[in-house]
Image (cartoon, rainbow, N blue to C red; front, side, top):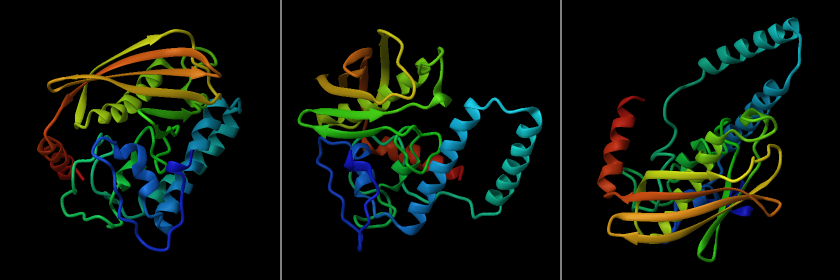
Amino acid sequence: MSSQQDVERDEPVIPFVAPNRSPRVEGIGLMDVTPERAAARRLAAGLREMIDLLSRTTASAEELNRAADAAESFGELLRELPAGLTYKGFAEAATAGGELEGVKPGDDRWNTFFDHSPFIGLANPLSPPLFMEYVEDRVEATVTFSSAYEGPPGCVHGGYVAGAFDELLGATQALSGAQGMTAHLGVDYRRPTPLERELQLTGWFDRREGRKIYARGEIRCDGVLTAEAQGLFIAIEPGHFKALLDERDKLS
């Protein structure tokens, strides 16, 4: 899917996300891919591969200790680099809610927090990552979980299946036109979800009852249903998200 792939641009793009669309679906594709951001994504991809390789290695103690020495040296290198938040916002933002404090459209930091999401972030080595897009009145996504996400033998851990649904339905509930946070997530595991296979996810808006927003979704592999989910989201005033953001920034 092209909506979240790296795209080179000569100048900043002013992003537009419709009121009933989630920027977590379109935000990464709207970002200006600076050299620093491209390098961060490249580094994250390398670390993601290392995590996968470590989860599958059958190396000896001597070989593992040699690799550990290299990892500790690399850690020292990273500790010497400047530290702090390089973005505005929060990776779990669900819907478009106006300008962020101190960030105007076209600002290089606009939407950059999505790069750090644990599920869709291209600059987060813990992210699988999950790629989402809007297709008519639904959200469709693809993801391939590596062996690092294993639960039952050869299958995705149920917690990561639930996490993928939370990300998917968090974007889907935006179709209601409101901004909400997860209140309840129920997952029905129909059969094991395989590792190392591309999974197809679909989410759709169910209904809204006052502040309560309901969304549903499913995961399939080659057309075979592996899991279903029902999510309840509570519409939240934008000021509540701002309060959470202020508290987070105090810790940085």
